[in-house]
Image 1 (cartoon, rainbow, N blue to C red):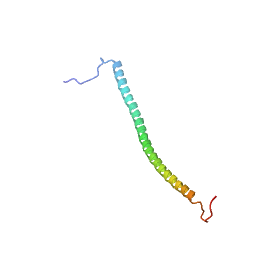
Image 2 (image 1 turned 180 degrees about the horizontal axis):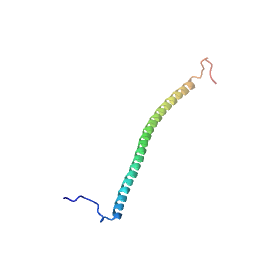
Image 3 (image 1 turned 30 degrees about the vertical axis):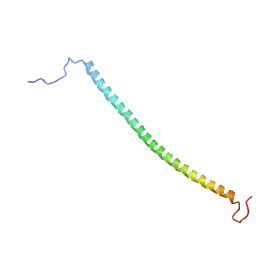
Image 4 (image 1 turned 60 degrees about the vertical axis):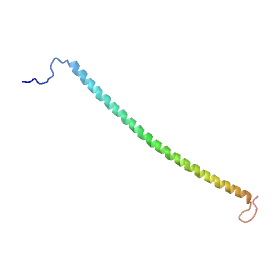
Length: 95
């Protein structure tokens, strides 16, 4: 009859406890690492969203700058036109 594998009394209890503690520590470390990775992933998602927001804000600023330049150009034209034509709609000269 073949011998079955078994834990004998010759294996010290301290060795078994040490191995169990090592395995438990490894599982605990892996769990903590998983939690850290999860936090980092959330942070990266937030950064991607912030970058997209920054790109949109930059585009809006460019559009506002173009609009401001158009308004300034129109105001300059009106100002220049007002200097040459000093009459009101009634036909009287403006002082």
